[in-house]
Image 1: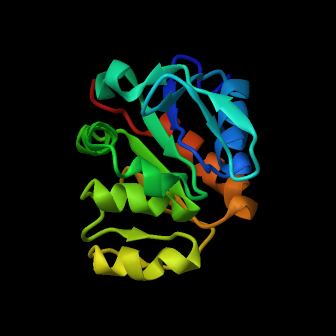
Image 2: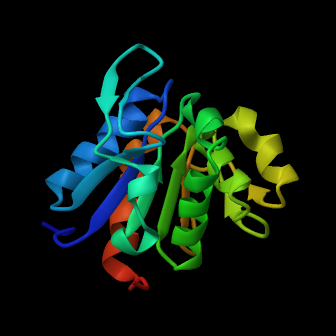
Length: 177
């Protein structure tokens, strides 16, 4: 139970990538974390293949002080997520408080829109590479990249390394309340 006492928010929106949402949810619950699925509204969202997820909390109901980490799954959901200022503010505040902000695949769009990637080294799905570079970050092609409290990964095949790095960060680095 390496994550006992840790609270993790996993963001959801329509067209999320199934593995990139459910793998971290189940892995972190298995490790003892309290995991809450957070969306723009407290409703059900559908994955790219139509698989539903019902969020536990709306973005209006959460505060950065309530969580130790936020995980942002990819798919096309990040394009919808970045349209919600409250969601971007939540991610930005998590980052500013030194808490783990983790994004995989197309989810790099969310920290980019939150304005927290300038000067960072990160990875993403290859088609987002130009967005990462244009936002002022250095893009590298690696399964997982950790730069301070920002953790990024490329594709579903990288999920084991992505989750290991998040767990490592949550067990090593003290975060501010």
